[in-house]
View (cartoon, rainbow, N blue to C red):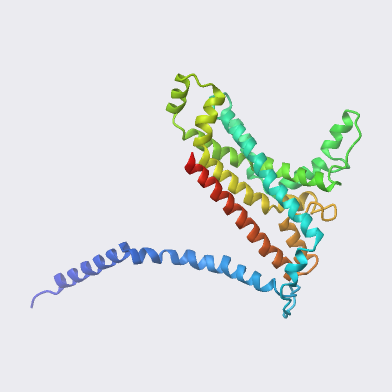
Length: 310
């Protein structure tokens, strides 16, 4: 009687070949997207849809039942002076931080792209604030700017000057928060610009030097155009980060005095937990989502076109 072992071996080899071919096919590769799509649906799409639903209700965030409120929460928002002030503050946080972070990040990158002593230490010092929690950073600066016993007022008093209540003025508090956000995240801008600078071939600078170009001419005609992708990444990231600012505001002023330094994120938090108006908080969250999406995508589109032109 002939042995069945060769037949079984051939069957096993055929199955292994079929499985290998299946997992190498396009349809099998498409299945790899399923876990990511599932997580995106559960943690992004469902909360987004639920937030839209809640924004049309009077839900207080705790009760089991809620009634429809139609567009009341949205119309209320555009007549609320506190919300209008919050939008202005958020624009300053977003645009102010973006401008300052890019100017300082680029300046540090240009300086630290040279061969100098202590280069690694200097880069670490600039980047170090990034690794600190934004909440902790806010509390550190609170102890610097507070009126009684603050480090800054101690320094002012040391020189015989009158102390200042730095955080009692809304506009001043807004700019102090913008400065702290800039200080914390300019290290990321510096790293991205450093990467962009180091990817530029030295041959361009050598050719420019042979034609007698000075530093500014080399920067304007070589560095600036070739840094366009790094500029795009930095500006879009900074705008999104600044417009959703939360932790530093809570730690430094908690949105005060009054509502003078609120951001959209902290206002949404206060509407939900302090005023127990989840419908209003959801409506503000939806407007904030649209606002940040439209602004960041518009800036991205403009900067990408600029990259192509350069």
